[in-house]
Amino acid sequence: GLKADSINKPFAQQCQDLVKVIEDFPAKELHTIFPWLVESIFGSLDGVLIGWNLRCLQGRVNPVEYSIVMEFLDPGRPSRSASSLTVPCTTTRSSSPLLGALA
Image (cartoon, rainbow, N blue to C red; front, side):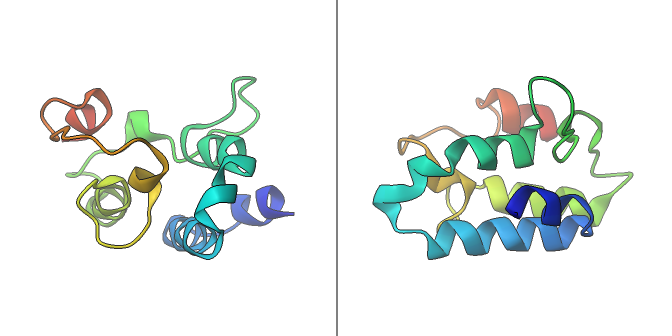
């Protein structure tokens, strides 16, 4: 299914696929795929899936992938993305632990 398909795709394609899934799913039903989305991005607790390996992502080393992640996680993004899965907040990049770590 979705999980197996995304593992073998290039990073940019994985991100585009997730955006499409988020945009295509009815907002009221996103909770049904939320665990899969979290594992796809952050990895699984058992370590089988590494997700996007955000801990190692650096703008100087991988500027394209870094830019893709920052856009995907940007709460100001106009379309539905990962940021739309959470309760709206006024978190900035510097005060967000995840985005602050990526900056």
